[in-house]
Amino acid sequence: MKYLVTGATGHLGSFVVEALLKKVPASELAVSVRNPEKAQHLSAQGVEVRHGDFDQPESLAAAFAGVERLLLISADGDNETRIRQHETAVQAAKNAGVQFIAYTSVAKADESTLGLAEVHRATEKAIRDSGIAYSLLRNNWYLENEGGSVQAAAQGAPWVHATGSAKVGWATRSDYAYAAAAVLAGEGHDNTVYELSGKPITQAELAAIAGEVLVKDIPVQNVDSAAYAEIMKGAGLPDFVVSMLVDMQSAIAQGALNVESDTLEQLLGRPAQPLSEGIKALLG
Image (cartoon, rainbow, N blue to C red):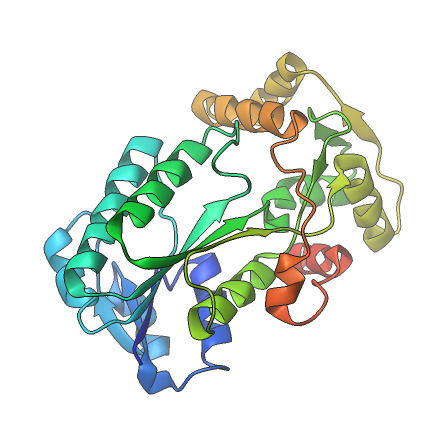
């Protein structure tokens, strides 16, 4: 059996490789990365490092050669670029004879109002249309996405958001990665769609958990979109980033990430990591 993980030197991919090396022999694991030099530490562990660039289809033919089970980790960039890159990768996987694709999607991708969900809907369709067996891993929000709020609170700033009382299924990046590894190296996951989520809680509840870790009361400010945008601009963020964040907050307020599911823990075979532990890690 040959397994391959794309984006293996990224934040999520690194955890996935770590998890897979506990499940399969290093000799059965390959990674596809744009810069093989950044994966020398994996070579040292016996992992086969291959050059693969979603913008260079010819590189993917070699990267995916002989691979039976592939984890396609969603790329970074604007929506149009990511859709093109993902469709290229799926076609390359089909051409290479890959038998199974697991893909890191987003919560409720088929109906989500999140702007980034467009990428995942298009990619999920490409995977289904390919005829390759698949598992769509619809990850909820990474706790690490709130790193800025946690760090700001540690410095005495309030916890600012524009999501009202909406709930989010936060979990740590590590837990999502270990669940992905369980699917890639496991059996019985053909043509499945998994909503992966921690227990949904509100921003105020997450701030309270952060407050327990910091041993301080964190004031929570729930503001409207206009006020949120001004606060983010005041923090020095570029306009395009501010616009993206405002759109995300709006979609979250509408319930885009309120998912009740215990599938993440089922795949992990254990309880999800407590958010307090994840917050401690964010604080360093």
